[in-house]
Image (tube, rainbow, N blue to C red; front, side):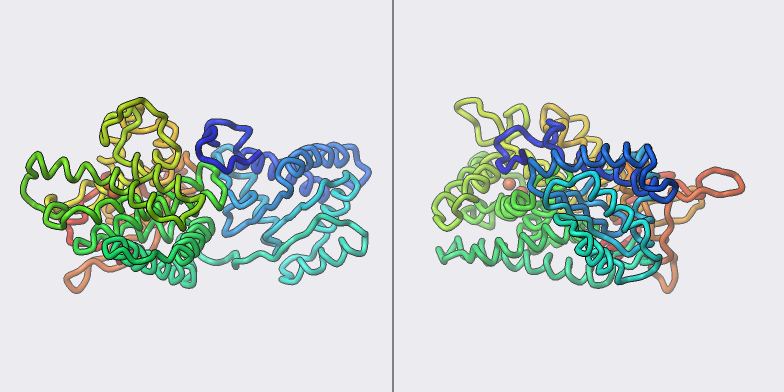
Length: 487
Ligand SMILES: [Fe+2]
Ligand SMILES: [Fe+2]
């Protein structure tokens, strides 16, 4: 049922294919049952009904997917490794459910075969009977399941401390993301130089690195998305390639692509501009206006890129995806752009995702010929205007939800006259204009990190929001290096 090929129906257009929808349904029903066990005894009619509802959510899913795996990490829910986007109206339920699980130190639920109502009910009563604050609860659940002869159900320990601050990553996660980011830069450099000197490309290393990037984004996308704010004039192409990979993976995750597809998407992002290795640096970095001939050369990089990938035999099944992304990333949704097509074709999902990521990253950062980057809200506005012409409407919507209307790293002025930098986007799309913000304090001639505030905080006395964004400011005018606040 899960689509492995991006050429098939894009999963975000077909609800049958969205594990996230199933995930939401499972969580709602499971939570109702769990809650029920604290009120009713096991023969109560409500319990029977909730159990049956839950079985009906679990078994069809097991039949098609082979397993059902729910993991909770810092109040993010992953359903068979795809993060469930929580809708505003469901938010309180998800929050309560994660609190119930946190209390019991359970972070994973796993079903590997179809369940009977009786076994499921027994399992949930075991869960609800656990003592609070006991870190080894998961072991006790497993033991009790075994003792009752219940197979195909298991639980795992909660991975993170629940009192951990939610807005910043654990230092470990940050360090890990940074390592991936800089390794990826090194890798792109190695591959691009390898192509120039016709050396062999270390494909295994590249695949492994992208798998790590996917894991990191699944755990917490804000760490790597934050790093994508790094601007580097000297190594623009390398930085840009890694950023495109990050945006592409993060977007792919949100539309429910499988883990394998996500790491392929990462590779496609890393290598989308590989054709530029065949274009002289003087032209790529030229600050003056390009001559028509030079412009033709620049525009040949998608085709050159596709040719380079074709020549590398070792890519195997990945090859077509890399070719699609390299070839299509300057084609628009309405098929204008370049290269000029002799015949109409449908753009691939990989091509569309990489081109969106490429467009965003290219405008958000400075270039040799443009001193300052555009402010990101302008870019998002522009993207919305171009929906249907430039970009796939459904993808743009998901992308903007991901980036937020105030993306990570945006400098904002608050109603309290405080200035701050956006450090985390809210999970709930209804709160897209209320991110978490790191306040700035001015001392010793420069801006320093202050405390982090959550703009969804409400003043209890007045019932209104404590802080809100009045407008965005240009970081260049204030000489603020955003990356320092995010990494
Ligand atoms: Fe390009
Ligand atoms: Fe690019």
